[in-house]
Image 1 (cartoon, rainbow, N blue to C red):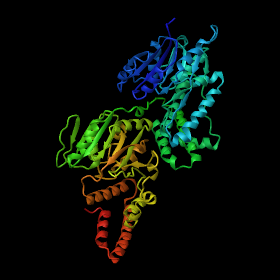
Image 2 (image 1 turned 30 degrees about the horizontal axis):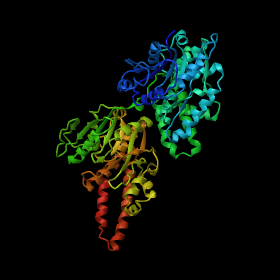
Image 3 (image 1 turned 60 degrees about the vertical axis):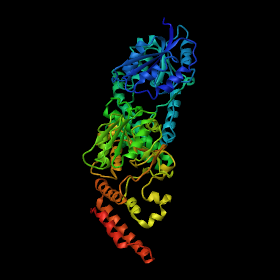
Image 4 (image 1 turned 90 degrees about the horizontal axis):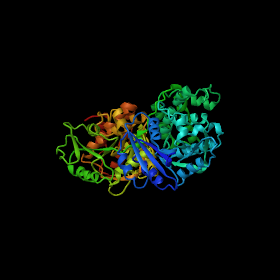
Length: 613
């Protein structure tokens, strides 16, 4: 018999951000018996090894490194094969075990009489969510329902919950042949079923619940996982026929609605996109229907997954982003950019820094630790960022205007926010030099928004919520963190792979509307867009361009966006009508003695609307 009582096996990939919480909890375990922790690095992608080495004096730790990329079942199989304990306890890297968890599992096994059947012990996971509309409407209630259902399971059905945290004797595990490494998903419950068939008594102990820090944080992620889960039933049923009920003809109105939604889902990507649309709508829906909206997306994704039958499990790597490439577009005076580079050099989280010089009259100077990409022609904001992004090597792209001021923890806080909001474009809270908060979150541009902004008589109401709503500012984003249609591009986090998949910025836009166009394409790909309340950056604003140039670029961008996503003619008609109203108002001001040339202003506004140079 082995000298070790328990081996805790932890599979991890890209887990450097998750492992510290788990390892701290394992270091706090209260257990009298000898034990070990076996961490299987399933492909080194984030220097988890160095992190683990810092715990060797606090945790009885062994580390196994493998090439990875062939699935979590293979990583678990290797960890179990090398475990030296009499009992093996699986613990995923996003769990927070209470101090008595390992001892509690061991006690359940050792309390068995010698003639009793082997025991399998399950710790159910209680999900921990940030305070979001998804969590309130669906995440927490769904987890509570799952826990109640699991605890009420008859003994012959408990194998279904053999998942993130469980224990069994090494002998019983070996006797059934271990994990099926050919399975891309549900390798855990499939093992649980074989254990149950072999006579292992499976118990679910409510005293051994464990906190789960990594549940799906939004509908998009939950729907994508539901698609894969549904797809995996076919793979599972090939091995164990009859364990899932056959698809039946929809009998209720709800089932018919789910079936209709499922018919439009043909992949994990489209399931994610449906979920993202639900996430965007949640804050606007009545509270009583939010849960149903999420449930519709999740259930439809599961039905579609089973129909399509693609059981390939795609790991959610966005939650594990650690490498960040910062692109700073530059044109003009190098002083603000140099000041920002000093702040980026002081970041507590390392970043790759790229300055994209857009054929500046004064070429940006070379600087140690900074890659300077030099363009031969001034192509505007989008083209310049694209040039910088081409040199990026990180998992995330952080686009920062050169006139920003950021704290040393800024990059680290953005990385942390990306764990909470995976598959998302993120923007920090932004204030000007006087502390006045910018309107970072916006609604997709509509003609009525642009007409309201064009009407100079309404300018007196600029400080009212009504005016901000009228011009398309999402006023909720000033009160709480949440999803919006799009965010301003002065400081913007984008998953780099998705940025490249959609082709980056449309370089036909010179300066304005390119960021909303990009985010609209990213949303169609399934990403959400979130205006954060933390961190905060200071934006000097304005840049070096004269105000008249900025206004012309603004209108040119709006017209191009309308041509691409709506109706250029309708926008031009609306702005012409607004110009007429401005002319009446300016004429009245002239009659009242103001020095206003109503005709000249109208001619100028019309030239902008017509796109004249």
